[in-house]
Length: 480
Image (tube, rainbow, N blue to C red):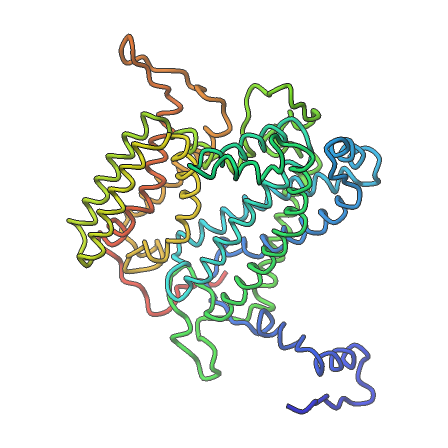
């Protein structure tokens, strides 16, 4: 294609001439129009659809504040803690930048959890948006890795011992565990080598992958179109102008919508930064204001709140819990064999995998399966597009009892998160007999673990049951 530059009037504004010059060499205006300016979105978005934009905002905040922190931070075991104190006390506005970054980490996970909740409620992972969901799960995994690697950098007591505990978990993997833990640490204990490795991953490696996944997530979203609370595909009903009749331009309508959401968020975000940056020890643990001491172990080591649901699943996996897992494996394989219409080959494969799992549960220690379940509880999110066999997408048109299933899942997740923050035995023990006692908190976390995993693994059965409501042909919308 030949090079073409639009002819503008001689008295055209300088800004218009500059934009025309750029557009002739780079599709700036086209990118804006395709990705936002002339991107048509369903007109019935509600407040649940604000969290995608907020996630982008917080990502920018984290990148910008991270750049300023790196200017003064020293990735050295003997200097790291002091450099953070220097940022907080001596660097002009350093305390604000540090608190924006630490609060931003928690805000990021709050927003992402809410964003994923919306996807779960409205079936945003269903066809044709499977790839969007998979990119989103990849983003979530990157965020977890980014948070984990960044957690060590302040080199406080909880940073040091939290990293020690998490890295040691890899040692539970049979055969390769000890060598894998050594490779991750770069030493036999968490040391300067570990700090440098984590720093490079936190600052360079994972952010590059994260930005790539975010770009892929947005491109895939704008290729197939946004979902909506009704689960109606608006692209199936086009108007005379070629645009869906139930959609509106993102700009200016959703630009104003997002600006309002951003304003509310920034008020809350600023209030936390200025008045409660530690948030009672949940955002910044008090032990992390003490320099790391390899010779003094804190009385209770726990990860930051956004990891605690999965940490609870790890702690819930005891040697007694393994027996319950064995029964669950037998029951699940039985359901696949007798309660599905899958091919005989798939059923045979399920029986073989089940037999291997039973042997492994008898051979390997419970700690290993705690790590497996902790990882599976995150990775299983990627299977949602294929696990959900519902006839409709949105929870609005599902049977009413489905809402209680979702509610039970949400409560179990919150309880796991709460118990993960607390030390073991927080609720004491229930003495069933003179020789047998139940740790109440541990038992509750085990029940919630079954609810959490059962929600996904049993979804092919329960999601298709019940009396579904009629989905409208067009979106339901009430102007306000």
